[in-house]
Image 1 (cartoon, rainbow, N blue to C red):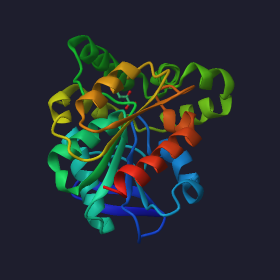
Image 2: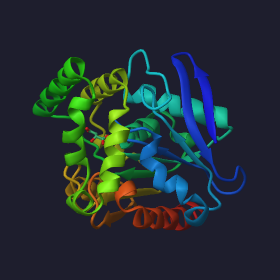
Image 3: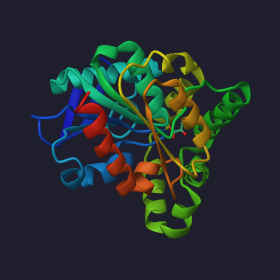
Image 4: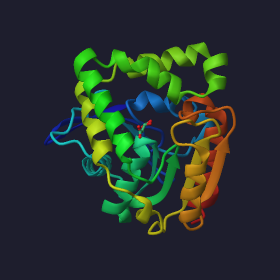
Length: 273
Ligand code: MLT
């Protein structure tokens, strides 16, 4: 069911799925420039994959049905997630994020550690951009401001989806393109600037004491497996899962494998913690 919260910057929308009693809720944070549709395969398989788990799946500010922040940043996105938890009556949750959602999850850990029961870092990285990465992002902002979001969709689809998905699953390729095309230009520009400005989170990894799942598509071209191996090595006791035949959007590309990995993590690492 969709929930809407009025925040000082405007509305925040999220999907609230599953039982409100029982196990610890799970928050799923999408990447760039997605919306909560990124997690559609987790929401739709909810009753079979995670029947006892409440899923909270927001549109991050500036995407989907959530208003943009006046000054977008990973800290601001993380605080919007905390406000969502307040509104949902959830003191503590498993915080999961993909790519940019992972940057937000790490910011959430720094700002609200007592609210984190566990972390799931998917297809993401801890490091900040280097100067050439920042320059590419500035070009992306200029393209969106000049030509609109549509101008960056084909490039993003090609880089975000793995070769197996692009060759064998044209329906998913089209669904992802539709999701990217509907991203508002203001949200896209704000998020790119927020990623340019984001801090290096490498030092954060050794501070993580919550159980952590690090998951990555084997064919992820944007945040390659090596990034996840390094992240997992730096987070004490974390578990690493690699997903065959998936690129950067593993939860959409191989939902059964990812859902099983999440369910096992919740069972073993979270419920028994
Ligand atoms: C994402 O999927 O969120 C992006 O690949 C993140 C990024 O561009 O760093």
